Length: 326
Ligand code: OGA
Ligand code: NI
Image (tube, rainbow, N blue to C red):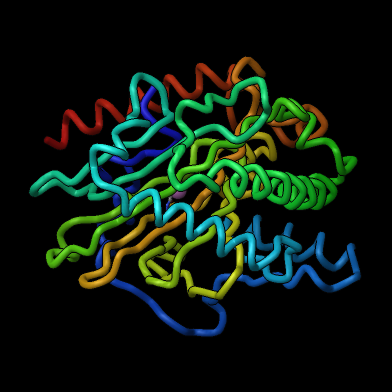
């Protein structure tokens, strides 16, 4: 298994419309603004509708006043940055081996992907491998543990609204991901500036393979989503969390929620960083359109698969894609 997302692949297997307008970027028009949902509003029904609508129309939205303390977000960013500032040999202490976890450096001349990253599981406790959590800086573990507690709460809140938006009890989606056994994986992305930033890309065009992703960026722009045949910049909002619908929520909702196509560009001068947390089903669970949502009038649009098998299929596709594009 390579990674939680399509990092190295070219866009050759993606719909051709993505490739056509890969360089056009749209800013600003009102109806094309990525939704921002303020969670300090006390009307839960309103929040449920906003989150549901954003997931149906966009597959991405930002949340503000989400309850994760700003100071904790800042600490998460500080310990992440401190890790990447270590000498290469020290970062290699947590180097990636077979699985998705660990540190990997990916700066290859002339190739599209250009990044270094560190990934490791955060939850459930039974799947955590602390050998992939940096020992330096010393506060790394404590800050990540505290962040995980908040991240899970926020994820569960959003999954609750998304369940209700489908007309289901609020626990439905989380339960179908394995409840407490749903897997949370953090990836700290570090993209060095590139003078050739129009040629190289930090994160290639992809959708996230899991259920839902909650991401904190730093202030350097670069994240873009594909909507209405153009690439739109995701505006940086201090302390906001960017929420992406991934493949599994699209499949479980029988296509009601959209898995959003996105990419990360490089900056010419500044280091861009981001901290996505990928929330995925327990690997042995069957995932497909929820039976409550399908029937004679609404046949399943997706095959039901064991999540592990879906991952293998997807990674194989990515590997082939890489082969064909090189
Ligand atoms: C990812 C991703 C975008 C970014 O890691 O899956 O989409 O902003 N990252 O770094
Ligand atoms: Ni992604």
